[in-house]
Length: 295
Image (cartoon, rainbow, N blue to C red):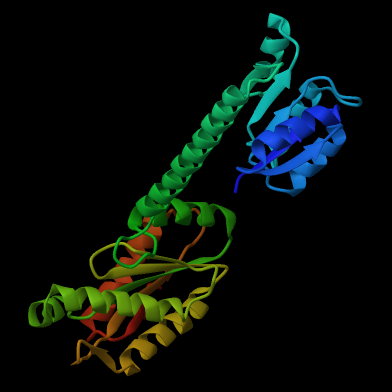
């Protein structure tokens, strides 16, 4: 049930509005501006019906305070007043009011306006949530839910600029084409998801994990030396190698190869990716299921 706050210094006006609205909405009321601000901050109010003339702060000042507060700034405010002059109406909108209803109140009008504004706010919230979901989808790999290459590069550049010591691990699933050709692409996808889920349990919260190719993954490790990164890479390799993976009743032998490199002074992310790619190539050339360093 939507919450509506009625702000008026005349109790009979509050009672009349309560009688009209309380069967459809949860009603709060205040007779002063300060009381209204306190209630709005603490009760997740959905809409405010605000009189202009109040004993302490006027309605304009109350609205300004609400709109400058992160907790209350998005609450729609409908001014309700006997003032009919254009200056009063104009000022109500200038301070952040979303609508203006003049007294004496007409029940049908006020119900329609409240319903319209609440529907509008609900639509705005849905659009905002959709925007957030779309942004998240655009930043994540569709299959695994970890970051994609574009997001990785953006976040990695930010981390490189804010940390003195950075290491990078590049991971490739060994003989992945054989897995796809032998068991099919659906099983191949399950292998990728399995690898990602396993690695997630073994890396730190601050490590940046992303899928940058079909079967290639990177882990950026802030505040980590080359020696420490090699230990982490060995732990990942050993864990995957020792796991007995069963997918759709199929026992599948999976191993990974890993290249490790660290960032030196004045190097860019591009330089680091080139170095770790060379290290990974060395791991594949030397028999796979192994970790190699760029040093």
